[in-house]
Image (cartoon, rainbow, N blue to C red):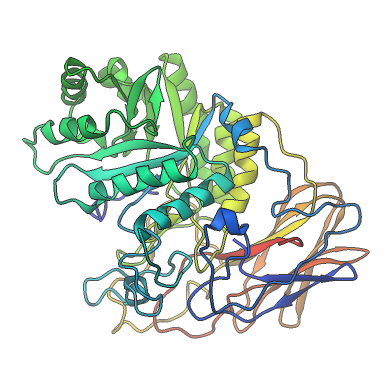
Length: 513
C-alpha cells in the first residue's frame, strides 16, 4: 500500500438478528462463518450482496408509537441531501473492492489475508467486505454498483477515487467500471479524482495530465464552478508550482481543473503562503483519536480566512495490524467527535477516511461491523447537510468493542509486528453501547453475571461504556418499562489469543430490519 512508510492517521453495522415479539426484541446469536447477513440495508441498497448461509430474517415491530425504519431517524432523500452546498465523500481504495477475483468467499484473497501474522509479507487483515458468492456477467461493475448503493444509503455524494498514474496500475484500470456503475445506479453520484504522484523526485506531471484528458468528458466527475476537482493525497511531495504546471497544461488543452489537496499534515495557515493561489481549498489526512478532532474548527476558519473552502477528514479508527501502528479511537468516540467538530466548525465538505482500506480504516459494510459505522455516520451526515440534528423517530442500539483486551499475551512466533500505540489518546478497553434513544429509558450492558445500567432522561444519542470482561459475550439493551431492544454481540471477548486483534467490532440497529 502507498502509505506504509508514512506515520499518519486515516475510517459502520448491524451484526445481530433482531426479532420482536410483544415489544421485546430477542436475538439470534449464531454467526455465519464467512460473512454478516445482509440484513441492514434493503435488497435494493445492498445490490443483491447477501449471505447465502444466513437464515431468513424475520420481520420486527417498533416500540409503541414508533414507526418502522432501518435507521433511528428518517433519512432525507438523496435529492434533498444533494441540494445542500455541503458535500460528503468517502475515500475509495481500489485494491480492496468487494471481491478481488470473483471466487467463493472461503477461497478468495480476503480469506487468505485474514490473521496471517504478516509472516509471509502478505496482508494481515482483521476484517473484509461482506462476502458474496461468485457471480457471472460484469462482476466488477456489479460489485461497484453494490458499493454505490451502500454509499447512497448513508447519504454520501460520491467517492474520492485514488489511483496511480501508470498504464498497468489496476487502480486506474478499474475506474471505467466504477464510472459505468455510477451511470447504471444513479448519475447523481459523483467521483472525485485523486491522482497519486509518479515515483521519483524528478517525476514529470505527464501521466496525471494524460489520465485527466482520458476521462475529461465523464459527467460523474466532481466539478466546482465547471472545473474538474483533483484531490491528490500527500501532494506536498511536490511544490505548488509543480501542480500549477499540471493545471496550466490541462487548461491549454481546454480542461479546467481545481486542486483540493489532501495534505499529509499541516494547517491552511502554515500551507497558505505557498499554496493559497493554487488551490480551491484545503484538507488533510488528519489524525485518528477523539481529542485530535479539535483542530477541525480552527483549520476550517484558517481556510475561510484565506478565501478557500475546507474539507474535513472524518474517521472511525485507524488500526494497522501489518505494521503494528495503532491510534486509540475510544470505540465510536473518534467518529462522533470528528463529525461534531466538522459540523460545529462550519466545514464546507467532508470525507470519510476511508471507505474500504481494510489495512487502516474503513466505513463500508463489513464482516466484523456490518453497517454499524455507516448507520452512525448517516445520522451525522444528515445533520451536517441539513443544519440541525435529525429527530429520532425510533430507537436504535449499536455496540462497539474489541474481541480481547489489548494487554492479552499473544504468540510472538506467529505475529511479526506487535501492536503499539503510535500517539494520541491513551488505550482503553471498554465495551460501548451507543444508543439512539427516542424517549427516556435505561441502557443496560450485561457481561456474564455483571449488569451495569445508565438512565437516559431525554431523547438523544447516548454513549455508555464499561470495561470489557474476558470470557463473556456482551448483551446490550434499551429498557423502557420492559425491554425495548436487546442485542447480543456477535464478537465474544476472548481470554486467550494467538494473534492480536485490536480493531473495534460492531453491530446493532433498530427493531425494524
